[in-house]
Length: 512
Ligand code: FAD
Image 1 (cartoon, rainbow, N blue to C red):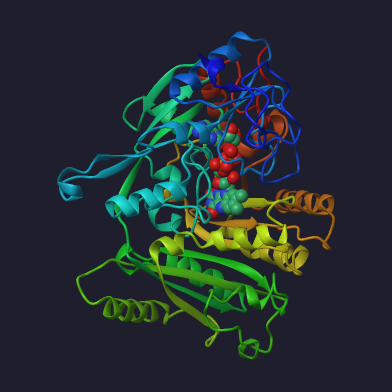
Image 2: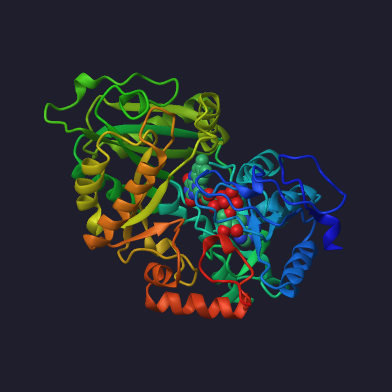
């Protein structure tokens, strides 16, 4: 049965070969990922059409000495996390594309007026597909997103899933009602906070270690019609963080729906500098407005307020939203005049990174290596981090966005597998390097990432790697901390005793 779905030669880039098994080619999609830094050739790629196919593949691996299984979402990892050297790679996109209907509305009595609505979506669905389906067919959408939506539901739920909505609505791992999971012993189980809660929470942020997510039930809300999107500029990091933290701790009725931000270089460099700030189609950056003492690095705070149709003329709604944003921004200490605002459709706003992808594909940097580093850094240490790392090591920019924005630990369930810093307020620091050519060698950038991690440890910053990439038990134990590591190991023994799953994370060796 499972063999019917095993595509030994092909992986996405190559023609299907239903004949005799052949080695998977080195350049195939399953042997690579968005990072482009490592490659691991699997024995075969499996294109499951159902959870049963996933279970068959895992059971077959359990019967074969040394064989491992990696679920591959859209391969947007950067350090081989979705690879399986000599193992089976499950192409989760195949599962999503074969399911008919792909998504299903669940609950929603009285069209949502009398009870909650959910979407049942395959683990390999892209968030972009969930968005379009929900808004177009039902006027509904999930509350929590990633910046870029061509990521799979199972892939982000295995990590966290964060964006500017996380401070208010929680990360994506806090926005799931139920999961269907095939565990490492080949059992297919439905779990939720009330049914098999230990498995449910283990899988969320579980780095693919405990089971393959074949279906997720995602809560839906009324989709906004439009978004008032605003960026403002700071010369002082202290003012930037004070305002950002104030915004993310406002009560819901006074809060934005989205708060993000990034560091950029105080120069006219088209990628790292002033031109990276204006919202597409908006005003240009007038550097003469910067205060005289502004340093080499500046900060851009980005906020968004959702607009729901209230029956008024759309023009009037837009004006009311602009006025509300001005009121909410009035107490902030940004550089007056360096404000960029636009009214955009909700789907356009959530799809904003697609424009970055188009440009990067045009200039070749989408397919070049991406030595990215993502960290969560506690508010306690973010000023020191800024001084030593952002203004110190990265003052010339990184040829891509340097995201720095706060979120709240209380929005994350401590029962999930995600490791977070200790403090209530912590920052995502995302160094999203694009190698356009002509810059430092990739090896140097990888070494710089290592130096940043080393500095965080040496300086005692309260921090955790997001999308961690470690080798060996000692490093993973340090990442999780003693108690969480013990729980992680116990959960592994319970749900994947042979350590078949997600070998690309390099946490547990396959049991003999
Ligand atoms: P993959 O990379 O294919 O897999 C990631 C891990 O999850 C692997 O270990 C894999 O085995 C496991 N896995 C995949 N599917 C399943 C499944 N169904 N069941 C169990 N395990 C599974 N992240 C954010 O949080 N916020 C962002 O704003 C954001 N923006 C991004 C923008 C870009 C351009 C890129 C490339 C990445 C971004 N990410 C962001 C990171 C993204 O969340 C990770 O790459 C994540 O791994 C999801 O990617 P994927 O679906 O391709 O999963």
